[in-house]
Amino acid sequence: MEKVLEVKDLHVSFKTFGGEVKAVRGVTFDLYKGETLAIVGESGCGKSVTSQSIMRLIPNPPGKIIKGSINFKGTDLTKLKERQMRNIRGADISMIFQDPMTALNPTIKIGEQIIEGILQHESISRQEAKKMALEMLELVGIPDPLERLNHYPHQFSGGMRQRIVIAMALVCQPEILIADEPTTALDVTIQAQILDLFRDIQKKTGVSIILITHDLGVVAQVANRIAVMYAGKIVEAGSRREIFYNPQHPYTKGLLNSVPRLDLEEADLIPIGGTPPDLFSPPAGCPFTARCSYAMEVCERAYPFKTHLSKEHHVDCWLQDERAMKMLASVK
Image (cartoon, rainbow, N blue to C red):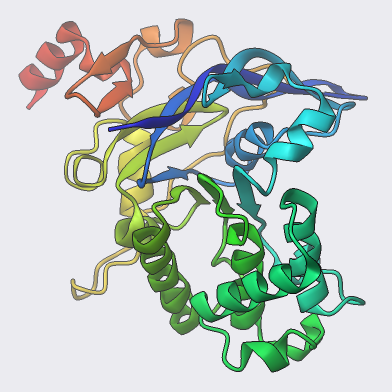
């Protein structure tokens, strides 16, 4: 399987009046051609900062990539100048932001907004760019695309605006599409339509997708692999089946237990107690220690080693240590 993106030991911090916020702390993952990788976790865990770092959209100051690499087609994006990154954004790597209304300019017709992006990256005539825009609107399911090119964002529903944003992101045929909470502001019916659209577009174009979300229901429908983030770190990663049917990190289990179960009568939601750690001064050990019912003394003192359970499945947890497993077995 061809690797299109390789993120290694990424660290991102923000300098504030209160001190340095260590938002991303050593994130490592790969993205392969034609797959969907979901990055999941609670708000504030570093998902969006990771995705914005790939696009080099972190404002500097106050944000800064402290160390690590983001390799795309043999090029480390962290080393590129802003002018070089502008040639990559939209053409090779595109992003869909959380709120389609704020991603669109309310004073400009949507046709102009799509055509502008095409002309920025393609050496073609305006007429050819308009043809590409029409084809993309048709691909994402906008009815009467020729007429709709002349409409303003407020003339579309929330679901239609999201489709337009997707069209803008895909019109230059990027290799990677980063979708940051693309269904958060939509109702369940429209959400399902957008997820179907993602699957359909991926089959037709072969684009690789990084899906940023806290909604495991969304993940279950579209993701090939899942990376679980907590306090700026990926604490567990694996295939969709491995994460849903064989979760190993207590935080992953907590996320799954907090998902509503419609297939079980009187199924209770089990929330994760406590709050995430302060990233002004992250803990030396496992960041989930204070909220974990299995926490041991070592969890507080040292960060756990990475344990590989299969080719794709790995977890950072002291419970994988043989001594902890023997102790748990004796308790049972």
